[in-house]
Length: 247
Image (cartoon, rainbow, N blue to C red; front, side, top):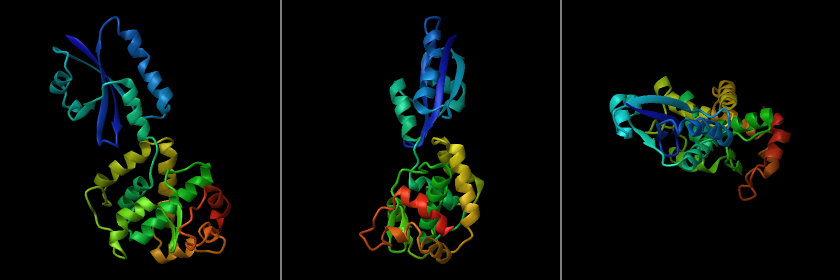
């Protein structure tokens, strides 16, 4: 029998589970014991990985799949360096990740979604002094905006955003992939807790009520040009100082 040592994780950027595949023998045991600590060091100790051992009659990964369908549709990565690179790509969130999760939790128009994506960012930033996602926040005419979210969902105008292939349903079946994506990120447990808290707090507001909050006097939006200065970036320092005025 041939022993197979498999280290697995998920790659949301390529849309599948990924794995490192090693054949076990006496000379490889010491080397393999060092791999997981390297991954944890490079990707963070809270990264989601799993290790598996399986025996087959063949050296190929296909023999592993044939023996256990759990490994079906797993992409084997050629090197530890590439495996770490793929994981780290997904350790940072973007605004669209948060938008997709929000749409699983509550029904939104485009305007309401933009406000909730911003409020999630502001609440997390003010609580932990860290970015929730990597996008810049801009001061558009009708309030704070993440450009990627704006471009994806602007076609809906004032209509409620409909479910498409990537989102959006209130059921757990559709919510879990979006939630797992956030949990996979750095500090994912803190991020999902903060996002859920923000949705629970503001998800029942109408678009107009959320606009009233973000347009308050001395809100981050209002002190950043109120959408009149070529959609100026709302800096984190401004959000930290003035977000308290729009709660």
